[in-house]
Amino acid sequence: ATATVKPPTTTLDDIFISVKTTKNYHRKRLPIILKTWFQLARKQTWFFTDTDDAEFQLKTNGHMINTNCSSSHSRKALCCKMSVEFDSFLNTDKRWFCHFDDDNYVNVPRLVRFLGDYNPKDEWYLGKPSIQAPLEIVKKEKKTVKKIKFWFATGGAGFCLSRALAVKMMPFASNSRFISTGERIRLPDDVTMGYIIEHLLKQPLTVVDQFHSHLEPMKFIRKDTIEDQLSFSYAKAKEEWNVVKIDGFSETEDQYRFLSLHCFLFPYFSFCPRRR
Ligand code: UDP
Ligand code: MN
Image 1 (cartoon, rainbow, N blue to C red):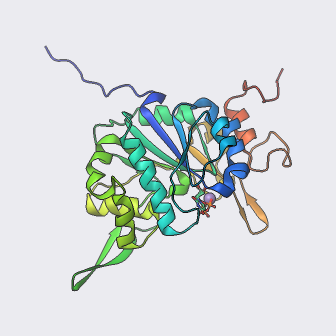
Image 2: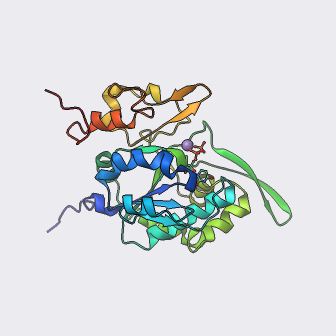
């Protein structure tokens, strides 16, 4: 007899959610995350930072990881953090690695349903580029200079890797090798990720439009599609805030719009206004 083999059902517990943060952003950026989407994935979400912080260690129930990487925005420091995120994922039995920045809002139940459409035993690199064409770099190898092109998923929008892909990446990324690979091409962590996956392993990026970084205007996300989106972000661009356009709390109460977004998605949450 033949049986139809369905991909395994994905649950929240199959996902390792890592958030990159830094000393100076704990008080500024973590409280809104802890109040909102973190509450829906308290056991699955880990914060990768560059210092010990007793206050936030308590607030995250022990989910702050001090990478001992330098607390600068340098390429080396960021690749160092990504390398610890990657190794921490490999040390779990989770099927998916999803990376986000600390200015992302993650739509947790949507992320779970989304990953359910993919088999983690296949190689998946799921994310969204921030440029219109693949990145072109010159690669110096011994005495020859080669032009190479590859896509990469913007770290600030969030991206996910299947375990099968992560295992294939190990020769270039595990046990701190992510740092040396990053050093070799001298490019940021998310670009290094794309270089390893698309160029070295020849596994293409699957473009997922539902990831959003603040490199795109948040105001263009339509209200009737908000529930379909996987991530959001915020930033101050010159005088104006680039934030999701959504009604709810006042601008003074909710500058980043994440409280309003959370109450739109989960109206019965404790801090959301009771509606009749
Ligand atoms: N970040 C970091 N070290 C730094 C500065 C930033 O780890 O010295 C992290 C920060 O917590 C965030 C990401 O890098 O998760 C992007 O930082 P930011 O939003 O400030 O800059 P962007 O690159 O988005 O303009
Ligand atoms: Mn940012």
